[in-house]
Image (cartoon, rainbow, N blue to C red; front, side, top):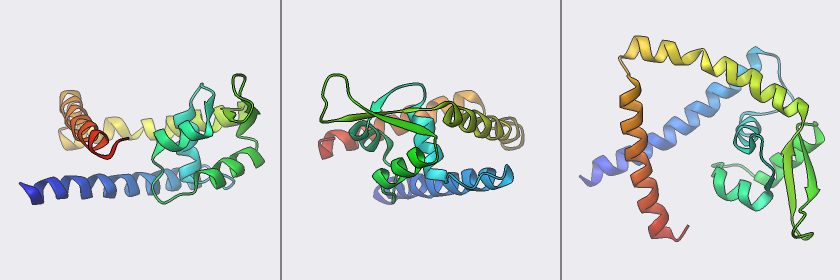
Length: 149
């Protein structure tokens, strides 16, 4: 049982790294060179919200990356804006600009093309994904509870 549990956790890490590589390949295919895969993932997770930097760091779990650096690059390249929080001037919030929304939508459309192929060639059904998501959420909640996150 222990090795199966570890294998699942290691598979999650591998999937994350492969997904980042997949995003990088898609960005290259549309000649986007001023944003990297982790930066796109940050844009995607911000969405239409305004989030403070701490929330982005805590929610994103951007493995092996410096969130502050990536946010600074996103600001420099005009993908996000940073403003002081309305309720606490010591903190700042970031939100996506029109340019950021455009690149987020463009790459989201490219990634969406993969979905029918994945389902049709690998006999994966939506129910399988729901079950998997539920089981992964159970593991995530267990780990959060035990690390105090």
